[in-house]
Length: 286
Image 1 (spheres, rainbow, N blue to C red):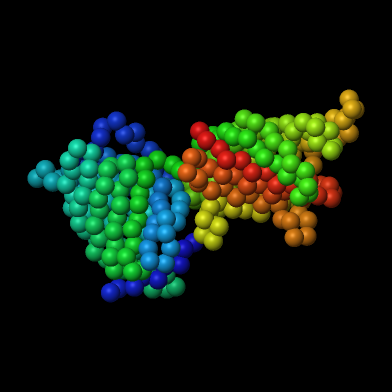
Image 2 (image 1 turned 45 degrees about the vertical axis):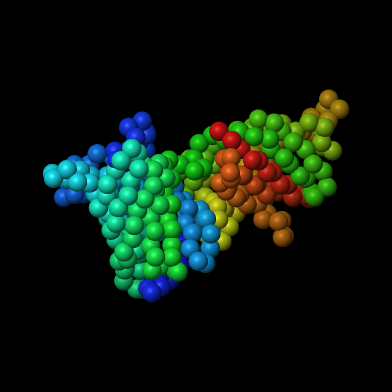
């Protein structure tokens, strides 16, 4: 998780589809009538870093009070809870309020003055007194969840390069914010081992890694297997399950990162006692 060091110094569009929040908290009836509730993903910038991705499930709620005014609540497990008095016009939202950020290293949570602005699908919360000025941008929906398709570019042993087109990889999110990745079966033709078929498998509970700015896990756990088939010159050399394993200096690991057009999935793995590491990279789009 992020270590934070806080330094003190129109109606929304109706065709936006609500997303069920990942967070377990519930709306606040004291705020008035809940009229909109959405979940989204975050990217954050401050003086110390720029446009860093901070995962899924941040919730925005809009309430209408009895006097006809509006308030907005923001909730994220990492960046805290905000409350804002807002105005809305033609899909734009703006207002002022406070953001209460979680305390770190035993410190109590602290509240900071903040502003909120932008279209209902992309809201920026500005907190001037945190880390030299911090901007938290909430984006409607999910950034990496879904089925992504692209060319899987595979390097074997650092020497041989192959590719498989239209490979589908599906990302789902868990209640704790980790994700699962299911890699569909795909084939590689004309390799040094013949024509290969790698079966479908799922890597579960991949956590977000702040240093790598993506979801990362070393997943060779001694149990996860893949079906591997190799046919060369009409003869089947392999047709069985292989465990994912680690080699010295080459851990079997998955990294999923958002990209400009979708996601990039980088999969470094070893199979059984095969003497070479394999790297598969896919730039996927929906």
